[in-house]
Length: 455
Image (cartoon, rainbow, N blue to C red; front, side):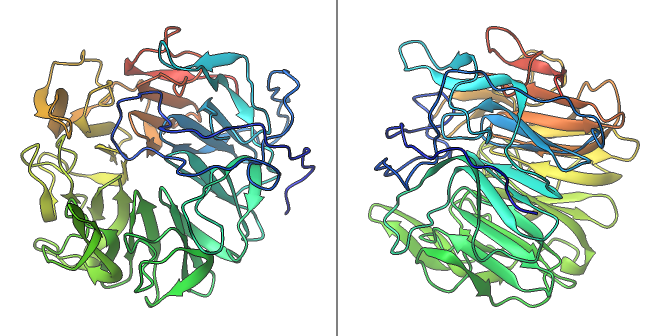
C-alpha cells in the first residue's frame, strides 16, 4: 500500500529545540540542529486554521498496538489506521495539520501545537508502528516503511540537518521489512531474508557499520540471522538464536560487556562507543535464553525464558535496578520480578507485564511514571543528571490499572498500556497532552492511569 493524497508542501516553520516543553531539559530529547526551511526541507502544509478531524471508524476499529514518543503517543487499529495525540511541534501527529486547537508550552515560551484528541495519521494502512523521541515510523503491508515527525538525517553528506515531516514520508531503501527499531536519529530494520539494515546519523557508531559516518541510505550490518532489533537514543541491540549484541553509544554501559571500545566525541566531552556489534555478557545465562529485548535512551533490558528480567546501562533513576546513580555495565537481574511475559523501556523507566496482565514499573517517578497512584515523593530519592533529587524506585511497583494489559509503550516521562478490552491507558507527565483527552486539564502529571478516549 502507498500513502494517499499529499497536501501541498510549503514550509512555514523555523528552527526549533528541545521537544518536551522543558527549556532546562538536558535529557536525550530530539533536537533540530539545523533547519533551513523552504521547499523540500519541511513538509508542513499551508495551515488554514482548521482543527484536525478524525472520521468515524466503521470496520476493524479495535486498537491492537500502542507506542509512545518523547511527548506524544500513538495507537494502531486492526484495520491499519494510526492515530496520534500529544505534541506536534515537529509533525509528531502526522496528519498534515500544524494547528489542532490546543497550545502547549511553558509560561513565557512560544506556544506549541498539540492535541489531546487522537487524530488520524495520513497513512492508509500499517501493520506495525514504533515511536521514539519526536518521530514515528510504520511498516505497511508491502513491507515498506513510512516515517513522520523529526526525521533521521536523510541528506547526503551529513551535516546535521533534520527535517520536520508533518505527513508520512516513505523511507527509501527500507523494503520487505519484517520488524524494525527506531532510535533518536537512526533506524534499523530486519528484512524478510534476514538482512539487517541501518540508516541515519552515525557519529556514535549507532548504525553498526564499522564507521562513524552518517548513512542516509540503508546499509547492511554484518550480523547473521537476527531475530529481533531494537533501538533508542544513539545505540541499538539485536538478538540472534545464540547471543545478544549491541552497538553505538556506551556512555552509561548500555553495550553490556564491561569493556572499553572506541572513543567518540571531542575533548573534554568524550565517551566510549562501538561501531561494531559487541556481545552482551549475561549473568548466569547466555543469549539463547533471551526471548525479548527492550531499550531506553541509554539502558537495555532482556526478558529471560524463565520469566525473569535482566537490565544494564545508565541507572540514574534505578531503571536497571540496583543502586540508583550507579551504572550497571553487565546485565543484572531485577529483584522481585518473576513470571514476566513482556517488557518495555523508555528514557529512564522500565516496565513489565507479568502473567495475568498486571503491570509493574521501576525507575524514575519524577512525573508519576510509576503509575501506582502514590504521590510523587513517596518512593526513593534519586539524584538525576542535573544533581536534582527526584522520586524513583529501583524495585518494581504495581501500576494501578483497572484491567490486565497486553502491551506497553514507555516514552520520556509517560507510559501507555493496551488493555485486555482494547482500551488504551496512559499515565505520567501530560505537558503536551500525551495522556489524551482525560488527562488533567492543566496539563499536569497523573500518577494513576487515565483512559484515552476519542478513537
